[in-house]
Length: 358
Image (tube, rainbow, N blue to C red):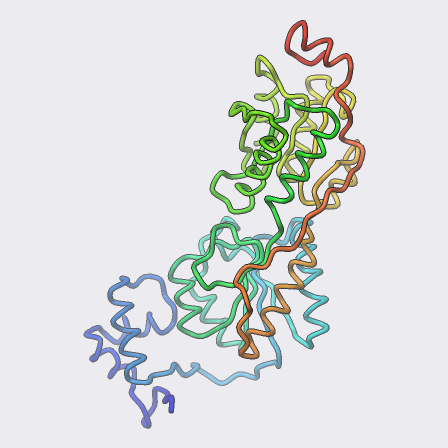
């Protein structure tokens, strides 16, 4: 039988002596603090398991039934709005309440709060959903140690083995975007990716390359640029593509937000979309419909991804183990007004100068 730190079981002082550390150090490990050396954490964790110590909450609180946490990188984007919509709907169907936190991960631009995971257990959350999160090794270890089920929604990096995640078919989306441009007659197709080492960014660029290879078109390294998933970065990279001796006639931009930066760069060169240049985005956020012209893009089902993650979490909270650790939802092309055939005047101009007409 599992015992708690009390007169009927080992106290924290007993655990500290068994691990050869001080009581404050043992307390840091129990509370998920990060300022503990890995070897020290290992000794304390082994002593906790061997002695059957289970941390008792500092005080008893009224725990609302069916409470889960959702951690998002930001609350200021339409991306997060779509995720919240999906989680809220699925949570309502499951009879759950949701606590939303933002900016607790490195991706959100803020250092993780050391006491957040401790608050997780204090308020009685039964599970966690992480969106676009880049967790530290100690955070993964803390969640596993405290046996708190969690699911990653579109993780930034490849999660550790055994971690459950839900995402979009990003490689498939890159193929769809590039095949669409190929079908319009474009062969000189550029791509503006996000980050080289991010799961979704790398997969979208890999899909672009695969589609070109299948069409018998050689890969041109100068046509591959990375804009960091920002409008400013994409604006800069679009200008670089246009300045090439032989610029592309179309570009696949790996997010709708970046596509707006590409639009701006094209406008500054007095190039009209799609009469002079075709653009495809990725995400199908509301901004893609509001852009002028409306953006052809690859839709990734953000709300459906979030709802799927919540349903997986509910199963894990009930003690079930998902059949696989990675679930991918299909992407599809949404054709709007930003793509068209290679203009005849483009072909004439490139035969003379290699550049699009101004």
